[in-house]
Image 1 (cartoon, rainbow, N blue to C red):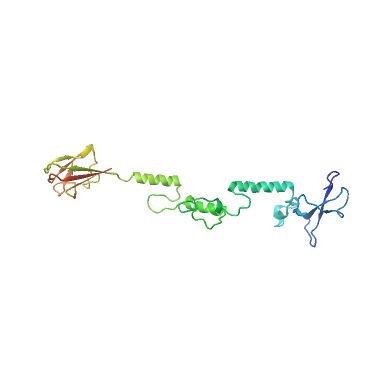
Image 2: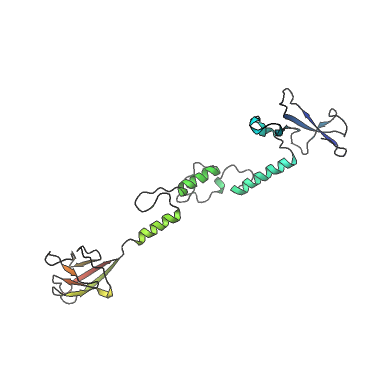
Length: 255
């Protein structure tokens, strides 16, 4: 490459002491007057510290599958355009992962690495981005549960909703206490206090209401079966046994 105004030429030559393939040459930049050979010139660089020669590979002469395994390693990287593109790639990568020049690990970038945070189980003190993301995926992305409530593989939102549904389905219990001032004869209709209601259980198991008096849990059902009271309606019971004055009746309404 030469020109009347540039004042330089580019000469291709083989590597000293070795041969090169026809597609690969070592290029050396020398400052020489236009029209002169390379003999009296000295190697030239744009900046101090740069190599005076670079390997160039002309890839258009062969198909990709026929290229040498080192082909891309000897592609020109000292040119202004090549350097700018490479630097932009580095900047893009740093922007993506949020690091600066000279960083070699993520340790200084990770916060909340104690237990109960996603990155508490990193494989080592200097994880790669891939290791950190795999660790995060193992702890949050993949979910395996035991028990009948949560479903394996559900998202966090789905899992929390399942827990909320399970909690909301648990029975609530309302406790009420009647403190009797006079005796209540057997066969009396007793009203559940404070206007509360319950669901009578036809099976005789008291699924909607539990009643205690004199410190004993009483059984609903029939007098013939030796039970203690009848679930007469949603607001009343009928006691088969006398309740004394001063006794406490504990009502536990299950909803």
